[in-house]
Length: 194
Image 1 (cartoon, rainbow, N blue to C red):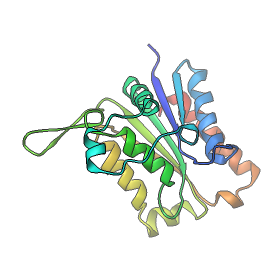
Image 2 (image 1 turned 135 degrees about the vertical axis):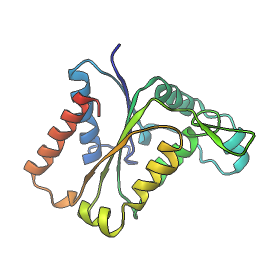
Image 3 (image 1 turned 45 degrees about the vertical axis):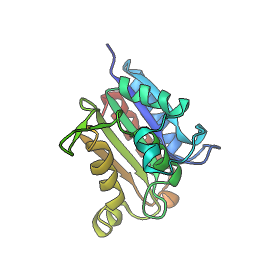
């Protein structure tokens, strides 16, 4: 059976046409070229409410569109998450999506002893982030704080490991040749399922 991959395209602009869209498409092309099954969840195209209380998070019924996303993730073996760095973290719409999807009884299960059982073991992920600053500055000066939070507090907490990352910096100043190199890199990663 072909490896199932879910791409979570997290750029919040529904008009598309951004580097994030192109990187996700290149990854998908590479994955499908070797027979992998790919499902794309374009967060900007999904309609869902914000979670506003602990009660909603722990016991609320997920909207149908979120249930479909959960089903796709549950059936996958690998996640690709693509988004731009906005105000030092992921866009609010993507954060709201993760809050809806990574609920109790889907991503983790509370135990009687106060611990949590991870429910998404057996899956890996790659986080792809674009940014206006140099990627090295984000990684070393800012210590990639929001990326580490997503990896540790969401993905790995739910049992998803390993989590790899690709950071693309200075995107507004990048030449066409450099952008093409990034797209080719993503296509290779898609073909490798990494």
